Length: 421
Ligand SMILES: Cc1cc2nc3c(=O)[nH]c(=O)nc-3n(C[C@H](O)[C@H](O)[C@H](O)COP(=O)(O)OP(=O)(O)OC[C@H]3O[C@@H](n4cnc5c(N)ncnc54)[C@H](O)[C@@H]3O)c2cc1C
Image 1 (tube, helix red, strand yellow):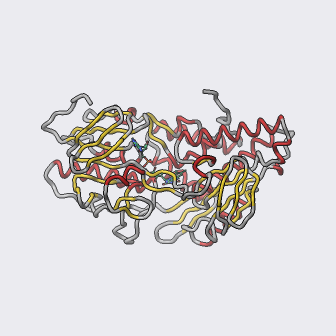
Image 2: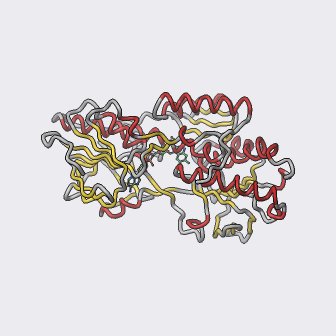
Image 3: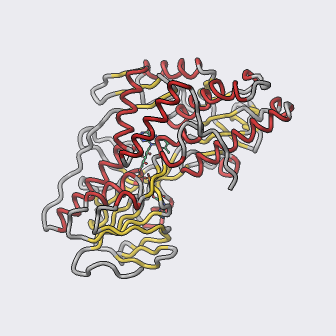
């Protein structure tokens, strides 16, 4: 890596340009440090809206934003698109695929999570996870391709080509199933007048006794009703055993004909953390102290999905959410700024904005910290407000509002096109 930094100033190496990494790097804008942020992509991915890309509601640039854009006004920051290959905590060095070895004074670890297939046979090879922008585009292209094919060859419909199984009754699975159902009934019904809409089934499969286990029973029931109203079949207490390109086998012995299986069943911390020799919490997450530092290496701060952060109020590990990632990243940046000035760090305090998810147009659920709940249109407004605030720039916010308003008024999903590469 070219030597751009003033050696008298501490170098802060930020790994990952997600909510966590960007929050940390931006909070260091006025500090006497040099910030180097590295991500394997040249864009920041807004994961909460990936399902809207997969279902043609939003275009890719509304969900993937150039990371460099976010630092135009920050003179002490340098950005690189590169892949982290290894981290040596004792030597305070990170090995990158192209940059080679880069040393640091402070390290912010914000590498996020990755999909956990739980060893289900065929899941890694044949399923469609929804974790990256590439995943969202791949799912959209698969669905569009199958409808075009079935329109030409109706025998494919009997074989289940248009059926989709969505695995996982958490927010990712529910949001995706709801949006796919609206794409089917709102758009494809008119796009493909010769295909009987009733012949295309969307099934949500959840291993536990209920979907949305993190919500109160009234919100869970509401979600089941909202999905059912949209034509989604909700199956609980069923575990997916194996997946082939055209069939999904459940542990109960039932076999579902479906050429698309969306995997929304679980995440685990980035695989790189397994090589660090640390004791990891459930799901490969790194436990941190109250200031978000690694107890064994206090110059390393861990933020976002890869961190197991214990909430000082509830003593529970915080969920893998955008607001947790952003707030923990910002806190890490502030902590490094304080340390660089010789000040003591402060403990992290999470400001809970509530747990929320949207099921479809006009249907959402919100559960606030004190237990207050909202559902329906008011919950959707709250969901949109919180998620707009998380979007990185005003331009992204404006674009999302225009697209959401357009889709709400016209039911159009104008991004439902497949572009050959
Ligand atoms: C489908 C989906 C829906 C969601 N919906 C919501 C929601 O509605 N509300 C909400 O609050 N949260 C939601 N979340 C969770 C939220 O998006 C995450 O908690 C948040 O993105 C975590 O931020 P992060 O910075 O920790 O990690 P990430 O955003 O994952 O960023 C990690 C970054 O590290 C980079 N990286 C990884 N490995 C390497 C490597 N080896 N080398 C270089 N770079 C690397 C990645 O490219 C990525 O940019 C959702 C998540 C998903 C997947």
